[in-house]
Image 1 (cartoon, rainbow, N blue to C red):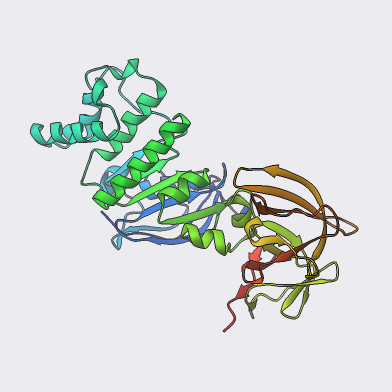
Image 2 (image 1 turned 180 degrees about the horizontal axis):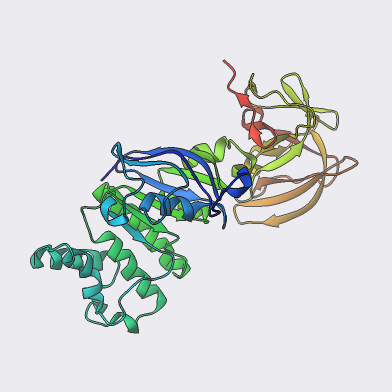
Length: 368
């Protein structure tokens, strides 16, 4: 296993990149401890796979260094880095049996036959492949073939890291949940460094101890699932994580408060000294639907119109619109049986969980 560090890594697929927009991966400085479980999360085209391939050695970065345990491996091959990688689509030998597919990485390294057999059967049990060990891989479904790919990535116990590039894309929804649980269980049992690429927030947040959120080739936040949910450093994180995502509302600054349509709204912390809004800056407050509520009778709140309500089981998702010249739409969650006013609706904000953003970036620090 290895501690992995990326120093000032950038990558462009152009021969002579000049502008920042020429880079598919903007500057990345990251460090992952030995034995951690990590996820790279973001939409298609955000740079996740480019970053993963730089870590694995399939791609050499245009700039910067990759270090494993302080050793510079920027120019080293995947084999020299001792990496196992599982790709989005199955990579199997169709003419081999399931058993031989799983055994191949071990036999290639001259592992004794008894240890090969024990390890293959352990992984087969874990992935429910025992009944198909004698079958040729060509006869399996896409699900079955991808389980072989997962097994081949997991079968070696001597790798520095196991990298997963959206490995559950072709797996049916129920089996996805089962395999995610098994991967997490395997990580807890073996303590191997695992890096998991996905566009699915559920996969990332349930698998990883720490998540790297990427947007347009840039790392916008690194944090635990709780940190990403409760204090998004960028509006994209608030939008991308959570269902529904974070509400954003244009505002003006009024001391330690934001002002929307004349209504003062408290936000967490205070404006950082390095984040004063310049001329033309986009100033917004962000608050998750979980931290909004309808104000009680006589209580101050932002006037809104109730637009629609959707039953989601234990709560209702309520869409409201501000009573302004250019109405903004917000969502809030109302517990089952909770009051939804028909008229004179006002919403109250949880100030401790309402954040201020300037040009998309969190602009506050905690009050002391």
